[in-house]
Length: 360
Image (tube, rainbow, N blue to C red; front, side, top):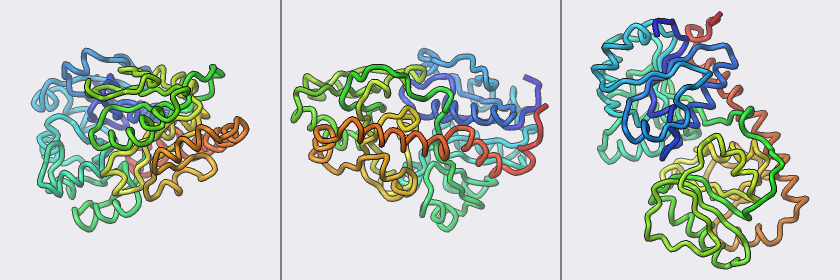
């Protein structure tokens, strides 16, 4: 662990995708950085709920290490943090405020905050809730890398004093997501952890269509859904689909559903990684509607739905050739604009010359 790294990331989790969307986002991005020849160290708080559900305990594209507390982080990894070309702290890191204050005392010359939850973060700060980031800390970073683009970037700089706010959207590892040729098993599927603010949209865009189309097959995969949800008989429930099986899961759907959290709909310009994963697999997407979606995903590659009628119409009336045209357009766009390698190149440009040196 004495090696000098181009980038050190302190994030929520890389080892476990259980109950969070951060792991797949980090995996794709770091895999892309590796394709650019960069050495990355990921530091993760060792917590039991992830330790018991690790689906990537030993990544082959970066170094992964754990720490038990802020004090342990400081004691064991100060040399790596000080010598890195760039340091990135992610959102939802346990004791994140203390972690950031500790790093700030190191006077790191090139350190950044990567917010995979920007609209949620800003909504919490507006309510005076400071769990993993304090408003006073935003101006400390060299830059604020935001999951959300559009007007949110200006707000981060104007209202919160970010020195430089830049959009760093999620991405997809094109080596791991693509057409598999599997037979389609479900007419419409959804992959995502339960969220109270997403549930009404899921009810409107999947559960109600399932009730109206009892002869069609539906699936909802994800953790933490309450036991009292009234699932129609034609909706299959899967508690967890590990990232290694995501590509297969998408390929077995005629359409997949993209549902966005309320804060992200309000902010706009906040694409889910599921949108790009499905696109890379060539699975047509039905999505809720939010500002910026038309700039991030081509209209010919997606079905926009505001209610169950839109979904039912798409399932009933879209022909196989129309679905194939959507799939082709989506895959072409994602591979060109939202692949992990492309996104990693964007990140390196944002981090600056100190993080772009050769790792040879």
